[in-house]
Length: 163
Image (cartoon, rainbow, N blue to C red; front, side):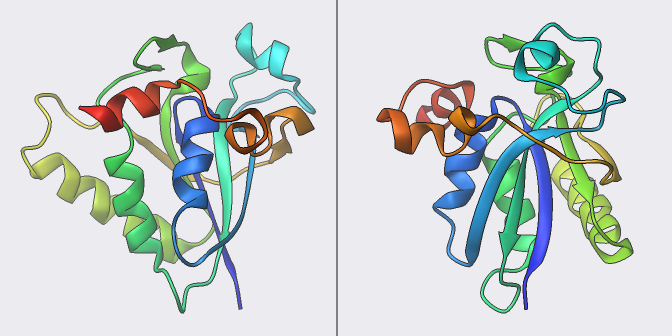
């Protein structure tokens, strides 16, 4: 039995890598969601106007890793208070978002966001949007497992983890 989770937390290369290293994660795929354009390309998403976020779709085994544990990882790997950006990456495609696949995920995400907001870890309110998962558009092949294919790299998420 597997389940799916979808998160947006800035540059999808680093987000994907962080989740690929999580036990119980079976597969990851980067792509675009939350927008209005069918079959968007990376260039179109980067130019803005599609409404899509760079996101990661995670297939996981809930008997090994819970959705709540994935939410904890999500909060830890980015700054959820930034609106339409992560570090040097600016634009609505870099927004922070949780795209839920069930009522149970929506309830868990809302509770987790409230706890994160109340935690005192951030100087500003959590800006993460929570919405039902909509149409998913897989990103181009060269974006999939980008860091594994290209020997690592720099991404806003990497800079956040160093602090």
